[in-house]
Length: 567
Image 1: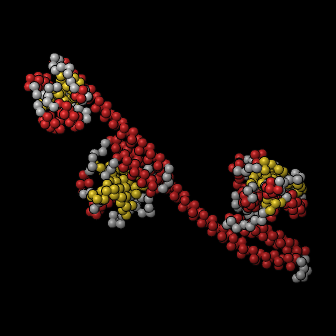
Image 2: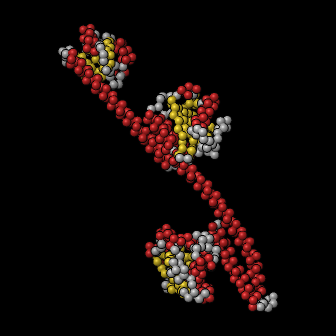
Image 3: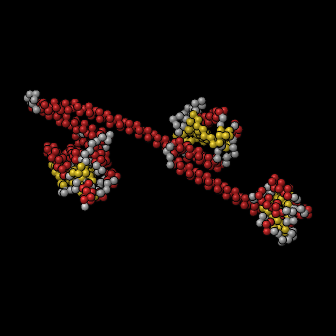
């Protein structure tokens, strides 16, 4: 039940207390001088020490014993009330000579129970503190896992978390995720000899293969060529083969079908069940971010390949377009010479075929120009000539250029413009290209007898309305804008296809769009040109009722800034 030391010079008191405590459940010791008291405490570490107040040089003994013990209870047996204060400050409980043996026994028993309760509470508090510390390490390690997509860093975070929570002597981490080849990461307290290293490599490979039993492991490992990366904390010391007598734990680093490696950890002192839980938790926690990091790496590599393919495609388009333009120019010139009668008279049938050839040459030239423009835009080589200008001049030019085409198809092309609109800072040629494309599309997809309207007005960015699929582009705008709208009464576009209309080479699937054909590059080029003007383009439409294509160009601030300087 407890260890009791009685320190006294009085033989009768020694005999009395031996009679009370000198039998089970107590272990009872006595000391009649200072040296024997110090020796008994050093060897037996008693729970309670009872000091006789008549003991010689008691204060000096109390001071020495206090420095040797932390939880031992000091009890003083007093003959009278005359006790030095310097002695009482060391004492927990007092006994008197007049007390009965029953009372003395009860006091000692109660003191032992209190001491044991305090020790249990201390142990509980220590365990709680250890648990809180370990939870904090797990939380910190999880936060590090969540904040990284670097596979090497993730493995480092795992080992760091194990070191903080378990204070290992050695970890052997076989990783298949940090480099292009398997690597054995050794994080060691002390240096490892070549012989011990060979044994650890063999052990790691055998552990790895044991994970798959009769199945083929996902990777083949050659022990002789297995790459090893060592990190040694105290290289002045060296591990021996007694390392294999240490306690150890082993776990795979995997998630579902994704296998990233395995880890074994060694520690000279035994692992507890809490240690095992913490070890397994960290080994499992790192698996998910490793999977994410692997997927991220695959996406990066795929994107690089796609970027390369996109670059090659753009270069191919540019080269082919230039190569096509040269013979196409020669064909066009030859057709012009023939149709002009410079090579003799051509009958009506021949003229009909010549006209057909000229129209298709012109159409092919338009496709080639679109391809060239797109390749220039994507390469960042498109030339712009910005200046203050009036949007009315752009609308008038496009209207006059396409009125004949619209009339040939039986369409009415009109404009409804807001007068005296402020100037914009833009490249007039590129805006003419944008508006020409929108009006040409309207002519293509509008049935005979219908009307196409070009409108313009001034609006604040906050007043612009667009379908949800264009909200991100519209929300980037701020300030005043000139808005141009091309409205037709054509076949319309389904809501789900509105955004797709601006994809490269896209053409909305219906019978009329297949009939009119086209490169599918006009709207993507228009979008890129408007982005270069800090503007935006969008549309809304209803099937079989028509479409409205809008683009917005910011109002020029050059004139306003000049007025501020002058006035």
